[in-house]
Image 1 (tube, rainbow, N blue to C red):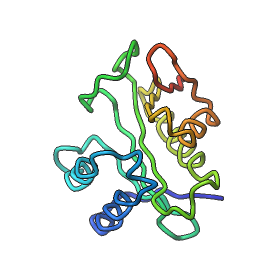
Image 2 (image 1 turned 60 degrees about the horizontal axis):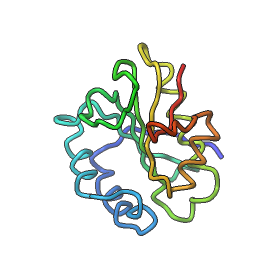
Image 3 (image 1 turned 90 degrees about the horizontal axis):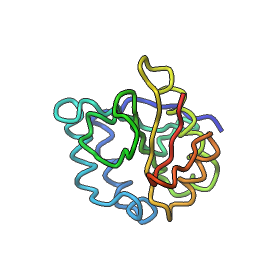
Image 4 (image 1 turned 45 degrees about the vertical axis):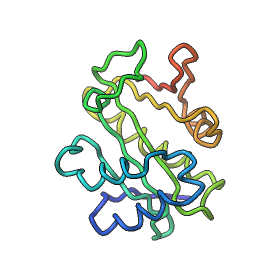
Length: 156
């Protein structure tokens, strides 16, 4: 059950847009036009986001990204310092690959990659609480749920 991450390319735009319109993705990825704008503008306005296509058995099956939280303009980090804080997003766009533990593998791959970055202190993630598969993938990779701040966290 190995996966690979490949840098997002312009040729992936159509596939990404198709994934965003699928019911099992749209349920969690609200405002698909905002997501699409981020990948279209990844070399300009959203240069701080690191976008990838998830490859499994030589086939693109999903999308993921990571970013230094301080650049995001988001404010859900709770009590945690912006310094050294990263966040991730991930999805399996091809429905037939859901429920096979691949989400857990995506989280593991991203986590390992980010934790090796100089200055990384923690990763925080805030999936919708109803997204049990995503929450489970985080917990199975050592993330803890911070009840007070309503987010998952993994610290060095």
